[in-house]
View 1: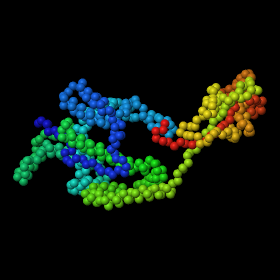
View 2 (view 1 turned 90 degrees about the horizontal axis):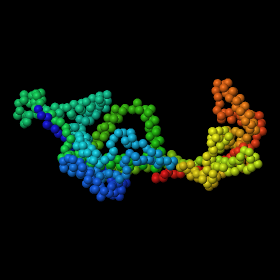
View 3 (view 1 turned 30 degrees about the vertical axis):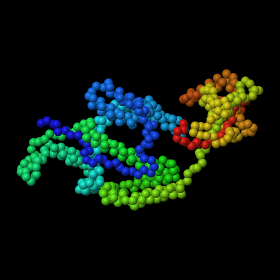
Length: 518
């Protein structure tokens, strides 16, 4: 028997309605100015789309369909670069613009690049097959709007049964597949006799379901292009996109002011409420009657779709009451947030430091120290950079010292740190001479015990032997520390070394972050 009984899914009932959402501010549809800024020029689009299918072999009707779909899709084509090489970064308050990894790019997923012909082909294929989703959506709308009360009541019976016995929930998809997929398919192969059942013999009527198949099996095929079902799917897809846009804007307009900390008192209070509720649920969730709660919620949501309830809700008095209740709840939250939460109004402040380094040759004992550099580190005798032989890093001029990124100066000028001994002790700096009066220089000390090469080699040999006897060896830094410690304990003669430094401090405050700041 030839299996030519094919059909396509499409919503042949009433169109999918568009939800109505009252917006507090701007609507979800972009303005004309914004729309123009995201479109290509008309002349360039026309030139590209006219020559798009000239080199493609095929029927003329398909080419016309391709051109029409391309022109429709070109209206939503953005003008910015959509290639995978375009770097997109989100600016941060620190001033950096790190590259955000796009897991959808071809670097991580092997997928074709964007192209209008591929998009057009995929859209036509998608639109030909999306009808089953719209049929399901339309049936849900009819179910929850009480179009047939018997079906809605049957759903409530099933809902009650599932809530009372939730362990039978896996049976629901299996039963749905049997009764809503396999039974209709079987009835298609075994159709009922034509005519009035009262006029047909009972034996013939009973035999129609148990005998051999009388009709071809129904197969599902995509809706043909430019057919009524194809345009029905486009109509419902259009309405679903509008529903999503309105719902998206409505959710954002309600949630965003509460959660984006534009009003820090309100968002902080909401955060504390959510934290307390989360802790309470974490402790007492097992004590709540979840079956009864879910059952009541299901009944309430289904009852809200009843026409009588909808008429009651849609009255001006009810809308006014709901608006006043929402306003009162927001006012209450604002009141308790202002009364119980106190925010820090002053900017965050810190103190930064810079070290003024001066240098004098070791052999020039009578010479003067000369300004060398302003460095963020004191370049102490036992610092890693000093031991490794690196030169200090910084800027030679005071005016070139900049505040940290994301901060600004709160003091007008730098202040000399008069408590030089404190920062020396805090950093455990050794082998230096500290001035407690005057200009507060911290000068390196050069010990005579380290001058001769013979004594220096002898000290290193002793230290190496001592380290090997203990089962290990010390690095050069440990050896230098040991020599300096022994020289200081034995009061060896010393003189001023090559480097001296002093500490300058200045206050900074964090800058407020603004959109578009880099």
